[in-house]
Image (cartoon, rainbow, N blue to C red; front, side):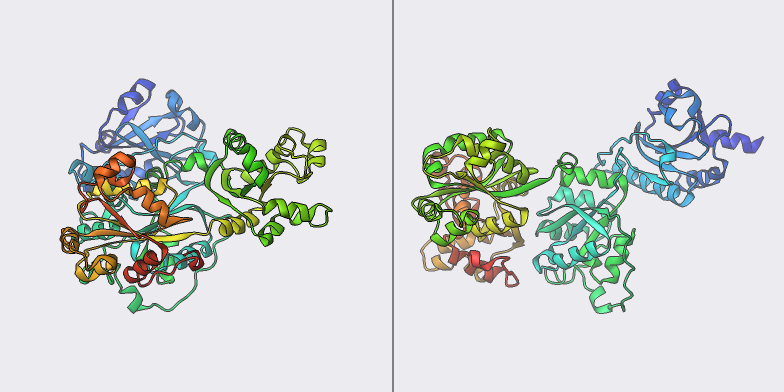
Length: 589
């Protein structure tokens, strides 16, 4: 009888919907053994639960419950099943499910969640935004931990650290991830905020070097990836000889000598594969289902809605006559059709460019006249993006000839904007995604410029400015925090070193670390100067009230940001500050 008494004390009995609702009021973690009346709770796990209860000694944070599925409406999906099911409730929200009496998995899950609750209670971490799971039929799974939402795909988060990004090692790691059999669902190079770093690395927050680690992770560009397991079998892990010299390197080797790296605990096969490739010290992995969903929301809040979209970028072109006469009408139709215009420019085509774009008409009698028209004035080139953009644009504009358009697509723009002097479509669109890539690269060649966020800009303001940079269409190609002493400042401000006010500039820069970035997009130099605004913040408020200097500048010296004046100055400064920088398309500068 003593044993039976201990068992009842260990696990509270829930056998009605009202008791279930009451149980959800528990604070902390509640481990629920879902059972059928005809077979009873899983006795095999009770020894483990009793052991954890005694060792963890957390009566306020840890609770064990047995719940009879037959009498609880919420648990209807689990009725008439013989396999044990364990649910994990945190403050009334079911955040995880494990099917089967998998003692090691249940044990680790309980320990992880209790440790999280301890840190939250001590103020050492922010509570993750758990996703409440949707109950599924246990027979549909093959055992193990169920996903925390009703999706078929499980994801992994990988973060490639700033030292790997700045040295271009991130591309090697990316290829290793693909070779390991994983699919990259979405990825982005980005500057992590302090909160994001503390949230992602909460498990190592108690390590002595963690504050230095946070500074390192927020001081450079990281490469964040969401991965899924591919359908093909994972390749055999290569048997490589250990490289003690490589494995001994810390992530601060080139940045903060003497500081060691808090290492993430090895948890999965991808981590093992990266270790065998001697690159694991540059990349951290998270696969805990609850944490992964939280981090996806944190890094890519639109991921779930974007997952089902096939966004495609294409080049579109309005030929000179249409551009001159009906530009606004066409742009309105483009917007109404759901396209977003990423970039646009007027361009007078050379004869060679016109012949390339009009190649489908080269055997027609009017080809010479067409080339003459195409080179007679500016065309409007656009980069458009939309879900299934390639095919939709083809359907919107119609075929290449007006005759065919009238027969097959009489509502197309080809018919609507037909010109009497030439029987061709007055709009052009990329023929394939590969052609689109080449054409966008040609007509909108990426350009690099140098940007500087000055020391007086607060961390919160930095994050706001970086978000403005991203929204303006820039890619942050490189980034690092640096204290600009006189020697370093000269690499950026070389053209004003002889000016009377240069010492005042140096004094402002010496107040703390600056954030130096390489920004990449077409027309980057002039677009960045436009986004910065006039040098004097007071003038910026009048002439460019939405500019960065108007919003964050304090004075002419403390005007928040700096940028290169021209492409030559940009590349000179970039090469001095980022000696290892290799532009991805040097011809664009």
